[in-house]
Amino acid sequence: MYFENTGIENTVIDLNILDDLMKKQGLVRAGQWDYERVTYDKKYVIKEGTFYLRVFGFTKDGDVGAHDANITLLKPVIGKHYYPHGVEYGENEVFPKHLLKSSEQTLAAVKAELAAFEIHA
Image (cartoon, rainbow, N blue to C red):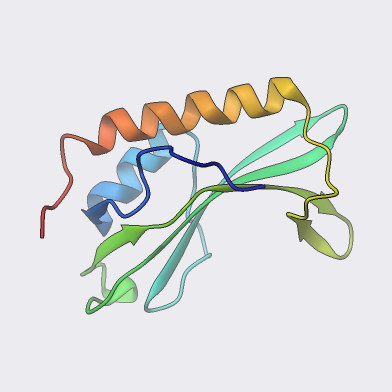
């Protein structure tokens, strides 16, 4: 399920600043990157299952591996993890209201922090 109108879509920010801001909100990049793309995850383990709030981003001309990139953020998504298959985002998934509320609060906090550092191209 995608989160609409979060205010972070299309934000452009330096990768190193982004890593720090996301980590403060519990969103971790870890090994989920390649030279042009990043994924930040916040894991929720609740009675209804294991879920991931994900924020994706990409760079047009930087190098994530060299920590030299401006990242453009995409629309955030939440998915449910199914062992051993992976994370499903489909419209048939059911997401508990308390999970969605917590995710929306996290995204609002990210938006507030990003506002001070956004790069205006």
